[in-house]
Image (cartoon, rainbow, N blue to C red):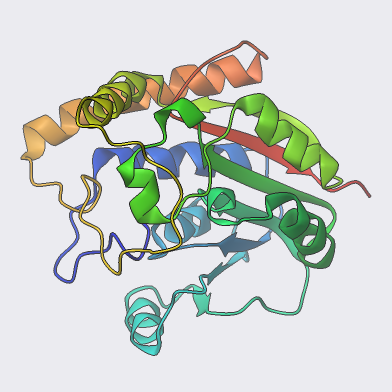
Length: 257
């Protein structure tokens, strides 16, 4: 969860967030048998980091870094998740794997950042797992509020990664079932004369469906089940190199040895 989406009171996790975390944990952790030291960059409230640590072999570590952490954030997050290290700045070391979920779209020079960042923080042979929002045609006020510079086509994401010296191992999409709701939101904006574009002014706090989930157990389980099926189909498509479309694009890459 983006820190600007994090509510001041108790968090009720959106089914989307729970399914998303499981999906990316499977991609990174399923073939791993030895302990890994993982950097979660742009980690928000550490929800994915906690799940990663549960999925990885004993002896693994997860460091969550987010430049938006305040001292209050660091104290609260460390107290809630003592197994994880939280930091505002990047540690001066290499990691076995780096996770960047919905981070690149926040960076103006994504290619330059990756070229510099990967060579200093990812060990040779290490893996980078990246996800980004897909389809620039679906850029809405939600993207503006979160500070997105762009959304990506799958081919564009691949080009950015390859130009940064990375070798894609597997790539695909996620949440095809959410394309229609986002397209409807985009049409509503157009009908109101809104032409969403990146903005330098970010909201301090954002209210979204991710941070305001209020439905009961039956509805939550039904939505989570549908999204889990969506995620499993997207994962299967990626593993057999079949095309797929979704609200997010992702790639698992390796830094050459």
